[in-house]
Length: 142
Image (cartoon, rainbow, N blue to C red; front, side):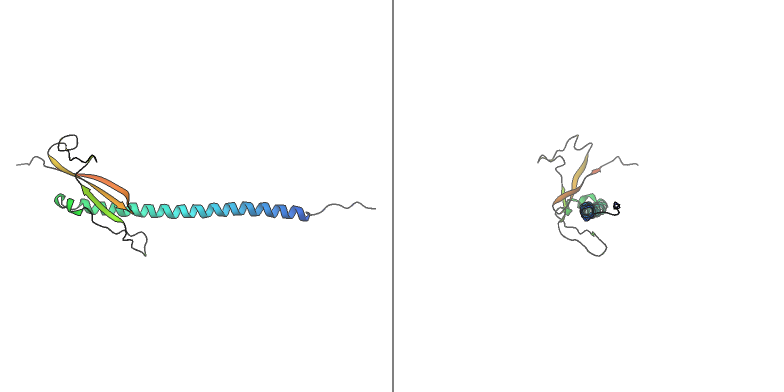
């Protein structure tokens, strides 16, 4: 009698190979989904930051005297091309530069004779951007 030569795979080997392939593909698919979610979140954060930079730029164009009047003002950010988000954007302007509850009128907080205010931009009640804006009275040229 002739000995049979083994050709191909047994059913058990095929099932084990398919199971391993399924586990690897599910893990890879989950990684892709997580990466897409993180990318979308980062794109939204970037859009928020760019929008706040634009709002700050517009605030810095205003006369210094009108900056304190902007305290509590709401602002809108365009997060995508088709929607306009108008919630939770808020401007805070104040004179307490170091946050200790006192308005310091001497150096190092005010160098020379001038005025200074802080501007903070919040979006969804989270601080996104902060600037200190100073106005100095320089020597006039004659």
